[in-house]
Length: 439
Image (cartoon, rainbow, N blue to C red; front, top):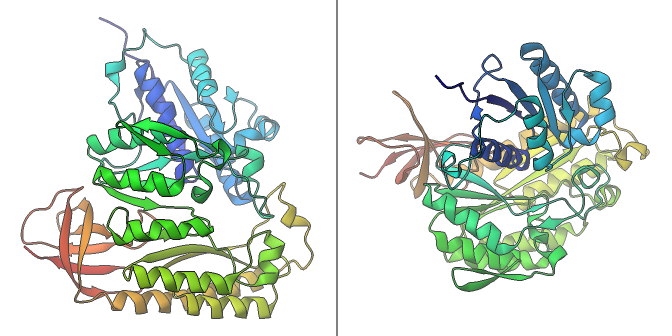
């Protein structure tokens, strides 16, 4: 009787970009004959893919490493916090290996050393779309690594490096494989989606007997030919973002933009080293909505940034009301080891941060409730995420998984996960919708 194949477990922390890294690592290991263990107990070794963006995330990563060591004992560390190898080894000296972000080959080599592969790889052990950690019907599509910005609150460039874009043809081949495997929604991610291709001078590459330029607009147009939902995340409001709006109006990509504005006060934005022309941004949002009335704009903001005054915060609330954003997340400023913002004067107390966060979220809740109420009586498309005995959960084109709202669906006929159905909206809360299928 042959020996059972070696099993590797994985703990994937942080953002969707890290999740894609985990998927690539698992795809390589699965191709080499490894099996994926669902628990610590059944794993011959455990990979912990860490996050290091905030101090709280760093601590979560260190805790996860400690848990994996306690439960399994054979732990390989990678990811953003892996760039701080000394910290990890000082805290957890028993880890087998430490590598930084997107060092896939180094991680696989560490696995080989800890748990040698049983036999030579066979490519048919892995589906063409690779191993994924998301449900079958949606997937993240990472188009680049790194970032060229120098935001004072962020250390991503020091961990993940400068912008490194993938050739457009490589992105399209991956996207097409995912679509053929049953993916109904592609979520385009990077550190700065708008900057895609700048580092490679927007070079063209061949896909489907045509040339596709490594540029956000051209990539979106090509992705729109695959017949799946295409959702854009982490879009900086560069001028050429206006070029993708007609693609939304034509139904090529979803009418959804995730733009991390972070603040609205010119003084705070300057301290953050972010663009500070918020009146112009309001004009552009209004123009986008004139072209695409059902457009969804989501964003994230930081309150309690060093030097943020009461006037700055009131300015932010007023801007938020004028912008009338659909989906908004808010974070209380948290010092990140190595970030230049830590040295700025005017630290805001934790109590004030807490109070401002609650006021911000209360203001946005009213905006969200008002915008969702307008959808009652309308017919919308919904992608089904979960089918339970007494509940069906889906998402509209306005809802990204895990970060936005949901749609509770009632249907007289059975529905399947991954199915896109039309529903009539019958009710709304501050963040979610409910409705009935039309058939």
